[in-house]
Amino acid sequence: MKELISNNKTKILIHLGLVLITFSLVYTSSLNPFTSRIMNVDTSVYVSITQGILRGQILYRDLVDNKGPLNYFLSVPGFYLGGIIGIWLTEFIFIFISFLFMYKTALMFVNEINAFLTMFFTSLAMHPFYFVNAGAEVYSLPFLVISLYIFSRHYIMNRNASLLELLTLGICFSSSILIRLNMFPLWAGFCLTIIIESAIKKKFLNIVKYIITFSFGVSIVIFPVYLYLKLNNILPEFYLYVISGGVSRGFQASLLRDFANFFYIVINRSFSFLPLGIGIIWFFIRYKNINTWYFLGFILSYLLSVIFLSFSSGFSYYNLILIPFFVPTLAFLTDSLLSLFSNIKYKRLAVIFLFCVLFSEGIVRLSYYVFFNFDSGIQIRNAGRFIDENTEPGDKIINLGGNAYIYPFTAREYASKYIFQDSSAFAHIPGARDEFVSTIISTKPKIISIFTAQGDVNTQLTVGWHEDILDLLATDYKLVSENYGFKIFLRL
Image 1 (cartoon, rainbow, N blue to C red):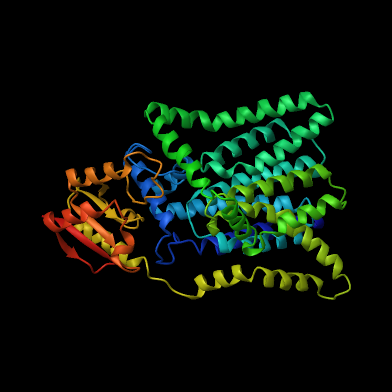
Image 2 (cartoon, helix red, strand yellow):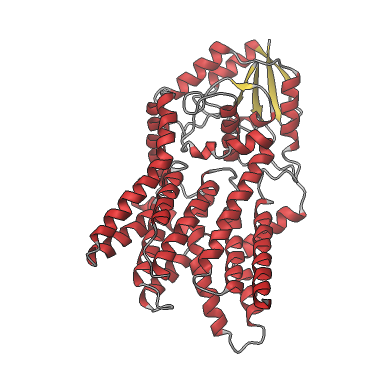
């Protein structure tokens, strides 16, 4: 009885610890209601599109971006219930689920205390990559982690995946690619390995079962999304903006030299080479008698993930999708280092200190946001209030530039489906620039704004997109404010 009570206490303390670790991460989010920090540029777009959907606008018809629909739909319940705070709480839930399954995965390698330490070290590794909030990488994370957990159970527990687990894998896979197309490598690597192993062992019925059940799980997510696209007659736009646009942006490295450079950058961020290196070591040693096929799937999945990240421009937040692979890696290193330090009195403290040094970037970033106050978002809130006070319901506005900072803080609707103007983001859309310019010139929105708080106005303007609109500003608008980090023009 005492042992049962002790075990329950341990579980409660561990889960409470996971909540605290989750809070320490999401506290650094630009959506955190306890601070007044400006959103990340991409975050401002995602929040604005979510807001537009709740106002009745149709994704890809009235709002243009190149991410999958779930990237925005997942924010809708939170935004509906609590605005930006609701989205922040949604992130909290998603991160907590991710941490919970990271911990459960680590438990397959080490004991409870070391699994919790693994989880803590993994959270430190996340901090340098966690700054685009309510976006593709954050929302994909629990689907990636849950899938890695299931693949790990398949091999480490030496058991075939149940129908429910296969169904879950399909749901997680389709959810991730409907957030962003290039999220598939984790499933590709492990599924290919499982199919090859089953074929070699002549377990062909297993292959059929895996494929059918996995596909059914995929259809559970894809079918309602297809209905949304079909009923709103936006399948062509979905293909053009998401599939064609995603592929064009995901393969920006056209030369082998560019690819090699991006590969080097991706693999060296915050020790991102560790999972690949440890995976290769695992392949040649017999770690805890785990099936060698697991390590092959692990290496292949991780290598594919890094390769597809290396085809794009290599933004650091992309590395967040590599974090699930840190869990088995750090569990192994924790276990190995504790064995190596077996003669040291405070060996666990020594391991904690070593990992804190390795992931000091995460500690510094967390400390920075905890101990320093930020008010970079206050001006934007005031600008939104100023716009609402100087317009009427039904008036429309547009912000010139590659951000959507102003929209979440005003009740006015957007004058164009190109709520942000980034020529590289819309290069694959024929006539995008002409459509934007003609819409603004013909409708003459009540307010046109330009963000100025972070430098020269010209840095916000896009060549080929804004020249004609600047001419319109000179003849049909007057400057009514430049006190809130924006130049705000009101139609005469």
